[in-house]
Image 1 (cartoon, rainbow, N blue to C red):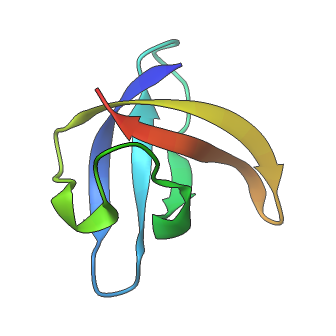
Image 2: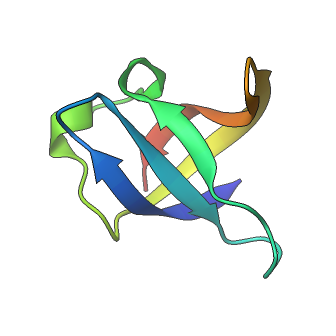
Length: 69
């Protein structure tokens, strides 16, 4: 899937991604440990395009295998 980072909580190590698919799709939580590829969490900025997969987390769906597009 693809989406856009809409919120980063850099001091807490997580953020939220707005999926491109579905206008009413809820923002997905992602943790800094979910970032893969050449980018690291500290390289990400709000507005960056990313690709990701969705897994069921303890509080609902979460983005994993997040890669900067």
